[in-house]
Length: 92
Image (tube, rainbow, N blue to C red):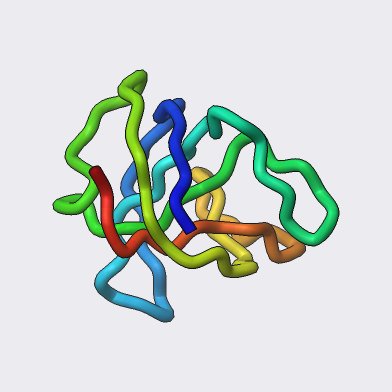
């Protein structure tokens, strides 16, 4: 799935299940996407820092797979319920 949008937040992220993930980027999608009947406007993207070289405020196009994950918040706590996240395979 390809998604276009603007980066609204970016921070370090360490995934205990996948050691290659070290960055989480929140993308405000140009045209909201529908996932399981829900309209999504902001979606987190899990990626490596080297694949996400763009800065906050820049428009990007990302390709990846949607997964439901219980991500860690910035305070270090895991979300109670899984949310749709995009696992990046390519960033432009």
